[in-house]
Length: 267
Image (spheres, rainbow, N blue to C red):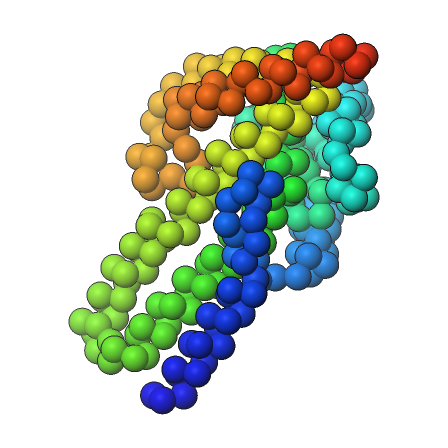
């Protein structure tokens, strides 16, 4: 197994070279090319539009109006992405973001986000995922975790039935100890980025807390334990938003003084 050592060293060198920092200063591992991920996002978004029914034009105009206001506040380089957003007919209160700037919002989310400011919190959050390269980081982390478990299995002689069972336990530990916490970190980070983005565009950041209070009331509990979830608990998300609210309110007040006052008619 001598060949594994230089392979592992090479992999480590690649990982170090691929380390960068997110918009909030958090260390990231990004192994995939931006062009490759953007193309994957484009293809997935096209498939979504073929398979899911689209909502009314009035709903599309409403959501597009909010997205346009937020994208207009991005730095010029980030505005160059092919930002697209579509509204899909689904009762599930959900939204998503794909690499390349492709986003979707379900009509069920419009029932939870009852004002333009609350929906701006949702859209700002999804844009935050894109700006912070979360899809790249998640894929890179999963690849690195799989590589680590594969090397461990090969070098420790765990090919027996008992060894494979132990590897299964280690795999679960990797999922809940490494991969899912990264996902929770992504959600918290997207909350912070989205909070600032909506405030810079002139949307009231305090409505982000109201949104999650609405979500709590609508879902009522029954979520898996936080350590087994890809999202932080709703109470923790509210606390995280409140901790950053003073800064966001300063951005909001500055935006209003500068005349940024979005008015997106709700359907």
